[in-house]
Every structure is written in structure tokens, then in C-alpha cells.
Length: 425
Image 1 (cartoon, rainbow, N blue to C red):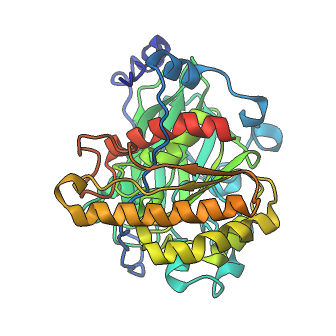
Image 2: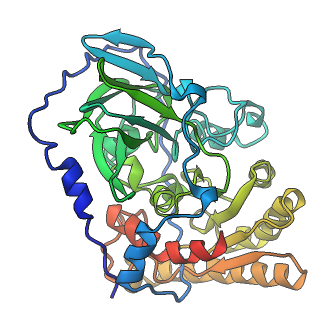
């Protein structure tokens, strides 16, 4: 039985007064210009895994709370550990996140600051993948402040704020985490888009006014033109430089992108980033994680600690047979020794009732296993295989539609993957 650790007492000491003695003045929402609409693509399925590994509850709690290797620790603020506010209004000072940068952005030469691919990828990758790459999935801003209240202001690229099976808070919202006195990341607050591409929302109030590190996740299925963090004028504010060392690069489908988490920090790649204390790059592309060779070329540009390839939900067995070996070899051309994990898809939640869906899982997995064995026979080094069977649990309650995980499903996926990834990176 897997045991989930309770929050430390330090968390309650820190946030115990969060509901009293502080009201934050809501930032005035400006009516933004009409934005170009984009159809959000649904992924064909989800990635699941299964390597027979279990972890006792005490071990799980110790692993989450223990200090990480030096390479995974925070690198501190930008030079001088200060940044000037972009504007001051109604007793609040507002800081533009792009002034110090986001973690989870792999390239600096982007067309828009919050794009996931460099500008030179346009026309080189499929148009639909380029369009989805404008989504800010996996990106987060880190900062420290002694503010008693924190607000967010962000301008979205698309007016499609939600999907039928995924709420606006996950598609287009902001998600704030704080590091407690024990060094654990705890959820702190949520920025909710309110029917407008120009959104502003209080994230948290009632803080005790102690200098604390925060992490702000950006939308999963929408892009952003601007993101600002607002604190009271009297508060101290220190940006924290994005980490680039010891990256884990996740390449996959809608599930990898975060469909259908209720808020951005609940995508399993982001959960794993917090637990492992590693920066992550989320290259999930809804409906289009298909092992494109051009993506492999781009991925190899990133100096990563691990490449995590989880594309089966968007591929049939024939496509898996055709593309797995060339993709791995393309990455190996640029990164001869970096670990690569090939990941089976998750089992559809309704597979016990629908033999056809189970057959889809089985045929894709067989094709991936065959490609993995071929690569092993050819002597490709540091290649790993992760099975998919137990990732979502056995009760069928981990998805919203049989395929895309709920928050419960993503936590289960992270629980399953965490001990595996600790061994690989």
C-alpha cells in the first residue's frame, strides 16, 4: 500500500494565519484586444508505464523531504538579486516575469518570450506542432518575497480559456507554490482567468510577512504574452534565476502537456520536477506527440540529464515501428551518453470493459518493446524501458475520459515514476 506523507507541521506554522487579517485589492482587469482563436487539439490517449517498483510510505516521505544533490539546488537570484518593478499602481508594485526569466524554457531564441521552441523551428516542424508549442506548459517563475499578499496579472494568447473536459484553471490559469520551513513545496494559490484574455487575480493573502521562496506555474494549454507578479509596495521582492543544469526533458502527447489537470502545477512532469528538485522541459503536444525526427533534432540541442520519450498514445503500432529507432538514433547523434527512457502508454481506464482499447495498448507496447530490443542489439548505450501497466492504478478512477488523467491520475503517475527517475538521473 502506498502511503502519502502528511504536510509537515512547519507548513501549518507558516500558513496558519493565511485566512485572516489580510485582504488584497483586486487588480483591475483591462479589456484586452480580441485574440486569434485556436482550436485546442485533443490527444488520442495517455502515456502509461509499468516497471514493477514499489516504495514504502516512510521511504517516500524521506525522499520527498531529504536534501537533493548540489546540482539540483536553487542557483539564487539574478545579479544583485533585484529587479525593478514594471509599474506601480494602487499600492501594488508589479514585476514582469520576463525580466528575470522562466524555468522550463529550453531556448532563448524564441519568437515570443514564452514559446517552447526557438523561432528557427517554424517551418521546420509541422505547423500544428508549432502552434501548440506556443502554449506555456511546464514553465514557471521563481522568486522570493516577504509580501503578505501576492497577485498575478497575465495576458493570454487565445480566448479559448477552457475545454469541455478540462477547466479554465488548468488550460489558462496560474498556479502558485511556496517552499515551507521544511523545504517542501506546498500549494499556495491559484490565478483564475475570468472570461477575458487580460486576466488578473489575487493568488494568496494573509501571509506572515517572512521571506519565502515561491514558484509560479504558467498555463498548460494556452500561451501568454505577458505575466506579472504583484506585491504590496512595502514588500521586498527578489527574483530567482532559472536553472538550466540537470534538465529532464519530457517529450510526449496531451497527457505530457498536462491534459486534464485542474491547475498547471498538477501535470505529472511538474510534480516530478518539484519532488526531484530538477528543472524540467515539457514538450508535450496535444494529439501530436508522434516521435517526429525534427523534434528529435531539437531535443538533442538541450543539455539534459534525461530524455523521457512518452509518445505511444498518439501513435499506432506501425508508426511506433517506423519512428522509434530513428528518433533514438537522432538524439544519440547529438547526445551520445545521456540516458533515454522509452515509455509505454498507460492502460485505458475502461480497458477491462472494452477489449479493443486494451488491444491498442498491447499492440503499441509490443512495437515499442521490439524497437527497444533492436536498439539494444545494435549497442545503443544508456537506453531504458519503462512499462505502462500500473501507472494510473487499478480502480479506473484516475482519468476524466478513460484516457486523460485527473489530478488523482497525475499524482499516481508521479508516484510510480519518481523512484524510477531517481535511479536514472
